[in-house]
Length: 278
Image 1: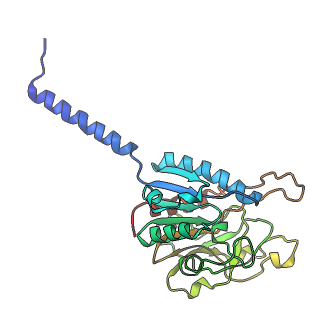
Image 2: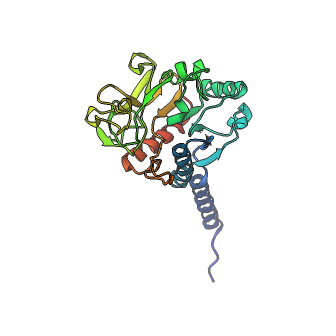
């Protein structure tokens, strides 16, 4: 009968601990993501939020990060945010001064953020007035909402910066998923802190179907994805699905995650944000 020697046993134990360590590393989340959302009033925004929660959860399994979401904006505190490396705003923004201050400190201290579509909206007077200068003017740089296209339609998007980690896998131009596109009061090109990653390509025009004439764009320059060099952040104008408003069925006619190329942009943006502090 063979009895292994002490050296053989020791080597076996070392290999056992090695493989346990490798297994532990593969299951340990690379980073933690928390998404805040409201999901009220606009059916297209609600549609996006629901599918975003499902999609990001699936991506978390695939790319090894944890994904949590909440409608409780009171969780926007330093203590709560300390557990997360990336914050998402899926539709709206914080309204309470204490929440806003906690988010600002989180970003000032090297936190990471990605915002979608309506999270950048501000219009005075409205339910979401421009009453947060740091967020809309300094952080986003966009100022207030100026106008939008209608109905939600796809656009040909042009990559402005192909060296950024969020855009490295994208072609020079690609077709987006249907979206309602925003115009802003500020010209982001004049802001030295803003790095525009994607804009609407001129081949998209006319963009929108109306029925109102001002809802159809025929020319102009419209950034749709950008970063602020002072922060670890990225804003994405996508996040408004097409809904059957005309027949009042509320049927979802499109998905923000229909475009594989656009999905590469979103996941690569998130992975870039999750790599650590700026």
